[in-house]
Image (tube, rainbow, N blue to C red):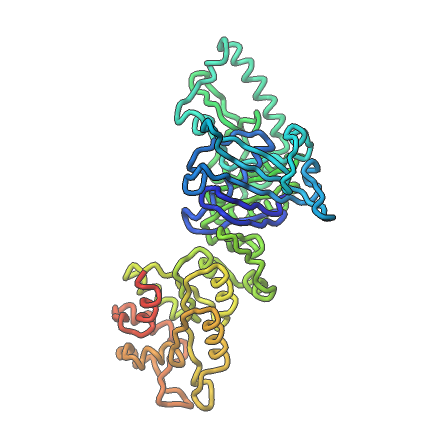
Length: 480
């Protein structure tokens, strides 16, 4: 349903975000605007659905509420027929929600078609295609309206007998309403060999709370937080109407196995668009590149098809941390990864070491560059693979790519152990080294001894701070 949302002057968002038809996951650092994006979508649709959304000056960019908040939502044509319009012979659909401050100091919403044409809001609200919009987790009324004040149900009921009658009737009606959804939830739990059910609370008149639950379907579950989170999502995906589900940090309370199954299940939900945020590399590992949106608005789909295919295949949780990190070091192998991770941990540096497993640097460089990440590449020059001790064509090509992307490339002399030996750090590892057969003046690791060299350097607490690789990384990242 939602093709794109464009923000102007809403909190820290100014730009366009494009979505696919089913699952969309937003990545970005803390305080970068991920939750604001979800709130902005809810605010935009509240003009149609008439849902409550409290506006304050902090919702305006830099709290300058003399400016106008403008949120433009482009929809698939005919998804909400009352919002269709003709744009120079092209069929389009969408709307604009604006928030402005009146002379009296109140904030008001205005609503128009995407082309700026005024429209009767009442006509739109009667459209049968208006979607249900859910924000997960559910939000209590007192959290929104009364800053912590709680009102008991007893305030509204004449007697406890009348309340019991009302409670029993309501509970039966709600159970009947939830029956198909509970079945779906139980089917999901069975995939984890769990026989869990959904039950309603047995409220007491003295402490009953009022909740916003997207209508009159209150529910609570005697299960763990993870399954409760899944239930909240699944119970709001099974309506006959179209649903838009906004989930802030989809991984909350969930075991990795639950995350994997939930994401796979969400892809199969009909008539639903899910827009979520995440900080989890496990979540990213389960996603396709086209399902990931950087909060900067960058579309990963702008990478060429070959890179996307390789990233979808090889970007496992260890490597996909690249999409969440700041200072990234790409290395070729396990030995470099182990040594550098030990050094950064010992010195409390904010580096993220990504092992590309061999020499497949380019897809990761392209992705990191697209997301404007600070990146350093470390690579062997492969001189001992040639007849004249010249860098290989593979290394020269990598050097060209890094130069074009303005990325720092740290050159290692042939292999890691050769470079460490030349720089005087392997004096206690002679038993693990041997002369290169073609170029005996160079030392390389004996067969299957690379990892042992790294382990010995760590066990003996060898100080690598003067190693040119460390110095160049520190200089590149300014010791962050």
